[in-house]
Amino acid sequence: MFLFHRFLSLLLVLVISFTAGRVAAQSENEPYRATISSDGVQHVNIRAGDYFFRPRHIIVKVNAPVMLVVRVEQGVIPHGLVLKAPKANISIDEDLSRESQTFTFTPTAPGKYAFYCPKKLLFFKSHREHGMEGVLEVVE
Image: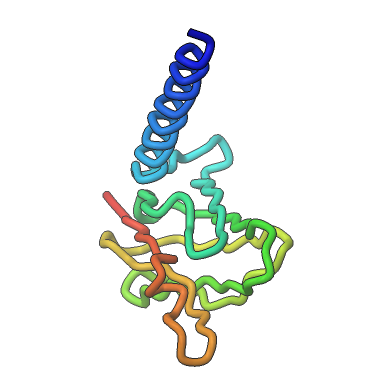
């Protein structure tokens, strides 16, 4: 009887862990919609790590300043951030460090613009090919 209760307890822990992981994964994939704060700026915090950016989908308004603050999680792999959208007056191509970095711009044209990590080691897949990319969606 004791072993049966231990088995049920373990099974319950596994089910809860699996369900919590799925809920967390679903919320990480939902778009982040920036709002214009009292200072007139759309503030967006991005976490970067081993082959990910969070959030991956960011929605901002056109013709309103955006302040991206990018923080890299601890690790040994170097990362960068590329977000080039000349049509929208956005140009970022920077190496990321362990210190938070701030990028400001005012998008001037609606559209969907890719951002990604351009790093690559020798003949291995690039970080972007590993999934370290996202989209900045500029809306009216």
